[in-house]
Length: 365
Image 1 (cartoon, rainbow, N blue to C red):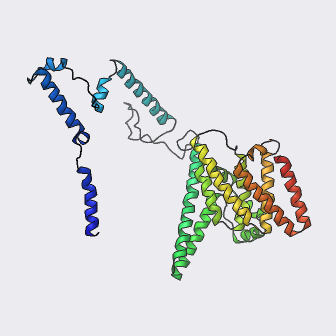
Image 2: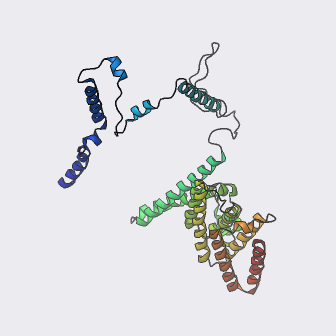
Image 3: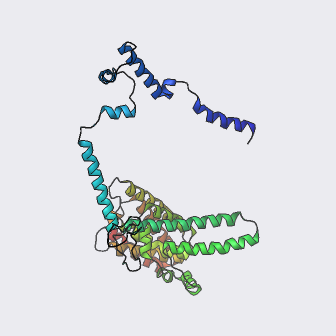
């Protein structure tokens, strides 16, 4: 650091020690001296005895009281504080008993028994226990968080490796980064619900994504989309997937997103954050739909409409699900692009698309 920078840092730290207003900066000392002076004035300069001091009352002034004096001035009646403390202790004992008996939390001491020595920790045999939903961190919301955190970690690793590969100039380092990036992309696919494929299955999926769709983990995708962080991660992951992988997973994402009630009306933070994250996801899907031009994309569009209709069939809920503006924009882009691609492929393909589109619009309207 230069001499000027050292002086600047020193001046900034010493500035906190400057006292411009002693009353403001040394409050307790100032108030203490004021009270001592008041006592001397009232006693005529003589030191009062304990009884006189107890009877002496300092007149109220506009000076603020310290937290200690304020709490003393509004003490609770005798017996009330004791009842409050006893209720808090009873509540704590009840919660502790629940965590020890039901949740099987580690760290509590076993109760002493004259016939058995006291163990340091009450540990149970984990292999003999059956998994139950009453254990800690096994509720649905914790599984949603775990899926989202796993996907987000894989996404950050892929983005970091791609950036390092782009900035690297050494060919040997690039080859190492490329092999590492390939493994990271496989982890990313598994984190989002695309199970691993061998080379033959991947070649088949390039012509027909249905072979790849059979390897989807729908439950994992649904868990990821239950949280705002997972939904945001999905919108970023779609950029790193290949075309056949996008075509395989996007229909399930659309169907699961539209299965969730639209704008439930609650003004809660998590619900509001999830709605915002879904808006970002729908904007990403709309951009993907607008950039699609292949026959594989047309198959994906048909599959999207089929899954959405099968999810809402007989429930009369599709119209309310499309009341969301972001969802409507994404589906509007899908229908327009489907008409454009089918018209370019010939009259038979166009008639087939018109039939599927009319059936979907009849269900939606």
